[in-house]
Length: 176
Image (cartoon, rainbow, N blue to C red; front, top):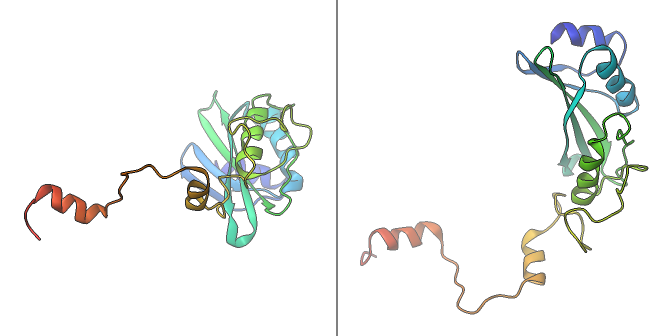
């Protein structure tokens, strides 16, 4: 993968290569060079399969990290491209015309993180969270407890136990 990184580095501004194992590596790329790099990897390097597109919310840095994982099945190797985008008004160019399966990933990322992919098919439609009106639930500033208290009634008789104390009572009844 180092040879590939060196070759690509002559064509694109790339970050440092992080090798997870001999056939899996990750590299950062500026947002404006992603599309050209994806096309190059697909059309000239044999990375013909989009395995996944996912996101990480770096709340403190005010950014999302998008990771595009591509597979070269012939040579049994994978490369992940990491792209940082601003969290506020998060928008990324769609790649659905390069890999049609990207449209599904992009719909999920829009719904769960609030990242927009203008022009991606059906990206505006509800996907998983039908009727959801709160902030996207995979954002790190989404308050799960607050949402549950506001939206789900407490059932009578429901108790919460401290796990350590509860298990001690279950395992050693009669002891203080």
